[in-house]
Length: 230
Ligand code: FPP
Image 1 (cartoon, rainbow, N blue to C red):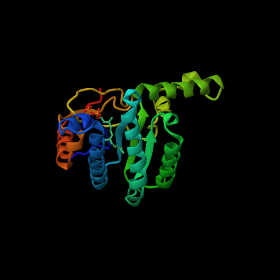
Image 2: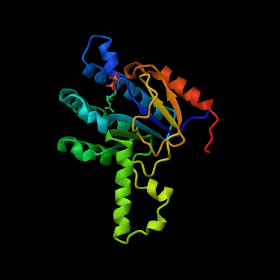
Image 3: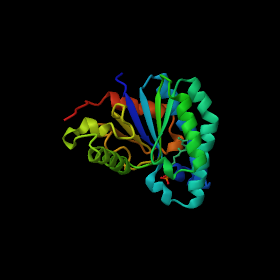
């Protein structure tokens, strides 16, 4: 079966999953950790090169303060609890997004986790936190403009390949499979540039219910697609 090289996942539906059980939205986010572990495990076992998870968007800062705080402490706890095991499984972890907006404590923990796992040769795992696809493109454009203004780069040398190197995922292959759970058929400002040719897979399954069998369905669907780049 033809497997994707790089999978992107929008993990949607935590709030609705919790609501259906009469629980607060934050219970859904907590339950969402198990499928996160599952997809990392499965992708590593299948030797998929890279996985990028959308954990918190630039727009998510507008959610109620208490929900944002819960999500942030969930990220902190997940880093504390899971990094040793990721490292043992040779996963290389990177956080993409505007990390200056995160608490300094969290920034420090992220930097430590990235440094610890940087030399690993297994699954490349990107977790997007405070990330937006447009933000990513604008930041890349600013860096190139600054390089051009300083004379370090000629504007005429900027092409798609040079531009892509300034993006958060610079060295990684583009995504070839984009999965979104939770029933909406939207990209929601995730990885705009990198998903230019990705196959899109949408499922109504809410993220906390996304299991290995559901991932398998997405992979089988991908294997059946005729990939075209023009
Ligand atoms: C979207 O569901 C989900 C989020 C905004 C948070 C995703 C976070 C996790 C799955 C937890 C941990 C992740 C890591 C990587 C440690 P929603 O709240 O928009 O749900 P709704 O559409 O039902 O309201």
